[in-house]
Length: 312
Length: 256
Ligand SMILES: Nc1ncnc2c1ncn2[C@@H]1O[C@H](COP(=O)(O)OP(=O)(O)OP(=O)(O)O)[C@@H](O)[C@H]1O
Ligand SMILES: [Mg+2]
Image 1 (cartoon, rainbow over the protein chains, first blue to last red):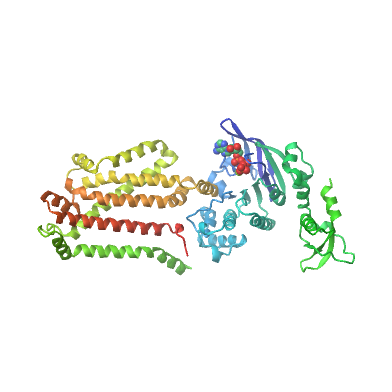
Image 2 (image 1 turned 30 degrees about the vertical axis):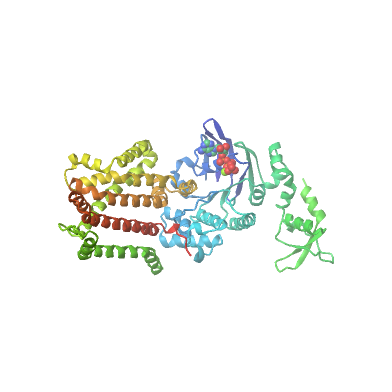
């Protein structure tokens, strides 16, 4: 869906991108990860031509992005920037319907769509539609930014540290909601972060960058299990074991309860990491797994978790 | 839905009701010749108390007409000029324009008036031209300042959403610069209103007429009549613009 071909970006003598080639498949979430200044934002912005590459080509749906007028290209791409950038002089509703309006949608259709988008990101239109951005909390503003990017139903979403400006609990909630939305919407998403944990949680594939180059482009499991360069190994650091557990669903690790039910419990939908945290916190050796009704349906043992965490 | 929208709109312009009423009252006060006569007679017992060649209301209306015309020209010249030099296409002319409008204001208005005389002749037109030069600076400077102060992330978002450069200017940059632009217009309007008292020096009319006449014949009552009226107009004009700013930029208000 998005293809970068040997993209180079120079600012004077400085090379912000040093030949990036990358392919993002339709419906996938690809996370651009790497230290500050490595070129993530620059690479992202070549897609909607806010940055024009010095060399190389970016293809969107097989077509060179330079073949479209920038405005038209951008109206077809959802864009969420780190600092949110809501329009302060427009109400929340007006912010969300900016792109539909630019596309010339009829008034009733675009307003209905904007309300739907607000509901989708968890903001009740009756409460929020007529507010101005300055009357929102950071988390609410992030949601509006997401609703605005989704409003015209673009196939491609560019998200530059969209959850960067909020506190950790809010960030986690926004991440969960993003995953829930993405399961339905199946957008092609290019997502920038410098938070390894966020990348592992959200990505279908991670592109780890350093100094304007791709160090490794792989599924999170592969990246964590098999770092290809010293830089990747260093970047992932000692938390890789724990992070791998956060990609493994509990479902496959459950053993039958033989008689007694462990005191601590985790929901069936959780990841292995959650069970591990509970075990550590309780100092227990096994934890019960409960279904939606709260019934214990099995257990997961500490040994199992340790084994899958270190498996290669 | 429609009702709610028109309700919202009428609520939004409610702050303008008070200024409109105040303008009516002030005009009524100006029309009340007798009150002025008695008050000025009490203050200056030994002088002809009231300028009799023209009614005060007439003078005030003439004064407002000169101010409004000059103000309109300031907007017609100043806004496009400032917007143009703030864009990439006109950026090369920015220093030139900034300097010219600054010089226009540092020139003493009396000098501008007399220098303009040979070109525009005697009468209110010359005054309007001089006032135009004098009033440009606040509008141009504030417009440039307001446009420069639009947050970069908002500009980036606007481009990223797919606004064309011109759409971005109209729908994002100018609305966001509006508070600063309006305060420049307000400054300029009050400045023009006050400076317009010099118009009679080159044959123009307005509230400067009794002032100039009073100075010539050493009659403080005439001078006071004009000066008090101008001061009242200036205060009311300033306040009206403040209200207008609030109405035009509701997104800045803190709501209960
Ligand atoms: N317009 C510009 N002019 C000059 N240098 C630039 C410009 N934009 C970016 N750079 C440089 O390019 C490099 C990459 O910038 P970029 O914004 O892509 O980094 P990033 O990976 O997004 O970092 P962060 O995580 O801090 O946002 C940086 O060193 C930056 O200073
Ligand atoms: Mg960045």
